Image (tube, rainbow, N blue to C red):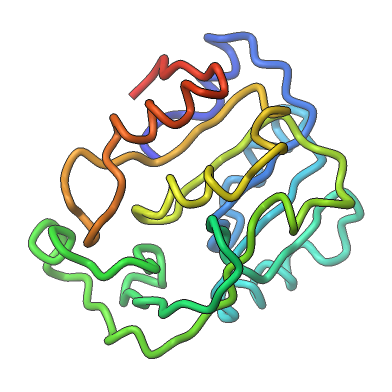
Length: 190
């Protein structure tokens, strides 16, 4: 993410009760969350390699929930294109412009299959948190479509957006704006 989480909290006086982090990777942002006295975190991460690291780091912390699935608008199994940069750029969507923007990052042929579920299914027994951090390499709109009622209970969203087809068929920033506006969200930083 290019936006600074700590600056956003200060600038907008965000009162965050808990964070749903979709596309957690290794949970690198957790220290920023703790520094801001946010202890309740749900990390959703589909890749088993990353999930094992999350388990090693957070399994013993009661306020952290770990879910080893991907988030989307439907329950299904999808190919994951794994990236050579410690899996950071891995995506459900086939890389496109990313290949020329970052020629040093190599993707496999999508032979890894991951489980996708809707957020409203995954969180049915978890008290909704009021902040979403979504970083899923072009699949963000599908995540929001699968949030259902949960999205109506969120106050703040920080998400990656695209202005180009970085991944094949990825939603553009205007599409995400349009969808989230139906839940009364307005983009204030880019």
